[in-house]
Amino acid sequence: MQKKLMAVAVAGALAAPAAALAQTSTVNMYGTITMNYILRIDPGALKQKQDMFNSHDSRIGFRGEEKLGGGLSSWFQCESTLDATGEETGGPDAANGFCTRNSGFGFRGAFGNIFWGNWDQPAKLVSSGARVFGSTGVYGHAQMMWNGSAGNTGNGTRAGSGSTNAATAAGEQGLSSDGANDNANSFFRRQMNSWHYHSPVWSGFQVMGSFSAPDEATAATPLTTTPKARMWSLGGQYTSGPLFLSLGYEQHKDFNPAQQGYFSDGGPYTGGTDRMWQLGAAYTFANVFRLTGLYTDVSYDTAGGLDMKRKSWLINMDWTIAGPHTLRAGYTNAGDAKGTAALAANGAVVVGGMRSSGGLGSSGAQALQIPYAYKFSKRTEVNFGYSVIDNDTFARYAIQTASNPATGGQKTDAWNLGINHRF
Image (cartoon, rainbow, N blue to C red; front, side):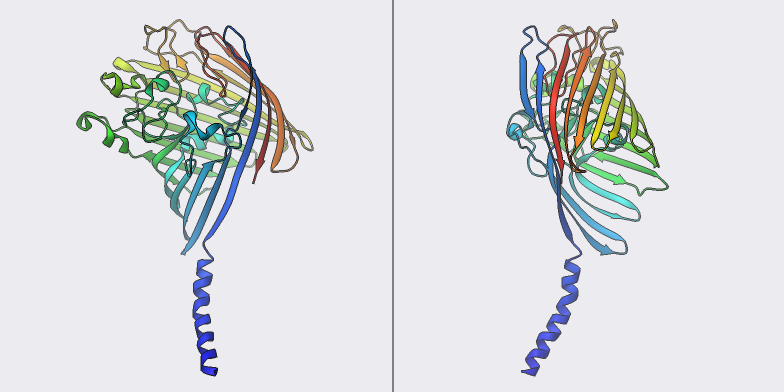
């Protein structure tokens, strides 16, 4: 009997370190639920009133980490769309399934963080500290600043068959046959099949870099003549007390947004290099009033060796008035599309939200956002506000919840009642 008890005690002592080691690997759940009820008037000739629900940027995720010793850890994250309205179960957002938001696997330590997966690009990440509003929804400004907000994207024009490139040629976001989005125009991206490095924070400074694998080219026909499209993205940011500064740069090689649908149309693909750089800043006064600014400069190589460019900027403010009461406001200005690209037969050269006016100007737009928020807690708030975009003669930008106007010079506006909860 004593021998049996001794054996059990020895087995338990040997198992204890293994159990303790297993417990160093942890998995946590987190998420955000956003629900908006929107009232707007269609900018078309009929001026139809519309109301709808929207659940942009809602997510649920799981992340875990294992300590490997010597300050080194392995980690994973799987983040998915959490849609309480049911709107993203079909249509153009059908690719928002399991692990289709920021998801990846990597290693972190004193050297920083190196990982790979489907993740927001550095140029996108460093912009967040220089703005108050998200990129999508009623208050979103992604189209005017970065030519759209793109998630689950591959490299430029997709090579798979069955791609709905007609939608992307009109500035919309389509799906390719493998379920990835086709948005070649956007410089605000969550990129599939990408490598990433995030440095440690050195006295307030941090740098980030990433590049994508051109694996879509393997599905192209003919493979031997298909350019291997690739994306590079860089970002740097500095934080010191109330001050925030950021700089971002992104390059798309052989994305050529003017050539959407070249496989189905049978036309040539001449390639090109598209670029974006941005500068951001923010300052918080007395811990209650935050003022931010962001400037972007985008350029595209379009068909026939021509180009198209645009400069945009925004100013945001976030004012904690007293207690749970917060007032936010934003102004966004998209400049005229410029460059050598001229008017096409249909009246405009389209690159995302940009439309050439053939050198005539008046292709910019201005947007204003003003919401009030009441915070029930640090995790739950209700907000109510107004957003409007006023297009110049040739511009056709739209609030993120609406389609682009059919003609230039239209104004789109909306009222929004929303709730946001983080867990």
